[in-house]
Length: 43
Image (cartoon, rainbow, N blue to C red; front, side):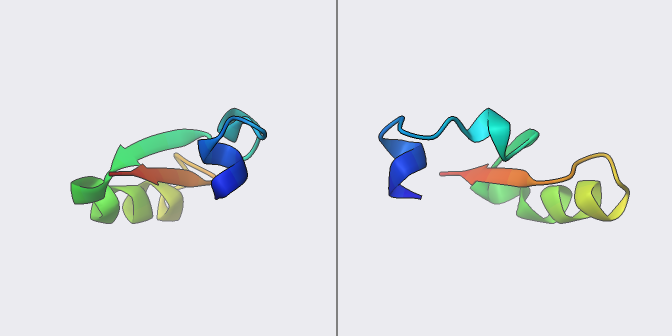
């Protein structure tokens, strides 16, 4: 995670959707529904 936060690794290469902390249930549902492969949770 530190590499993502400091810009060493671009999260777009790993994560395909971004959700806020209060959207965690939506993130899990998106992955279960195959609308997202990996969800990035921001706070």
